[in-house]
Length: 174
Image (cartoon, rainbow, N blue to C red):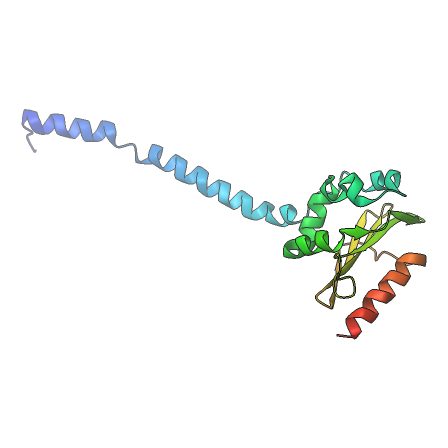
């Protein structure tokens, strides 16, 4: 049997009452849980929800995107930023000189070019309001790239098809 002196007994009682190791672990466990939930949710955060569709674009047909500040409207703004990533600023620049929004069927579209540099820097924007899909063709420094959301491809018709052909031909000259 071990006998404790009065000072030792007090010290042991203090250690026993302050040993809150499980309590100190709670914030760490909550932080870990938060990180795990974020990792699980990450794929759904990469693509914005499409609950708010693109139908509102139909009401803008005949108007110029710059007059509407179209690229800043939601949900279009966040969807374009997600779709284009670091190329979003080039898209906006290449749409500074543009025509009004036009329409064929359920597709709303417009094209534009960078001021004084349309043969090397231009863009074609297409939005299928029924399928809720956006496609962008971006001619940047003479290189043509396609950016499309998941879903059926947007069919090209009329003036949009002509603009696309012109973009391809400008890219071929490089």
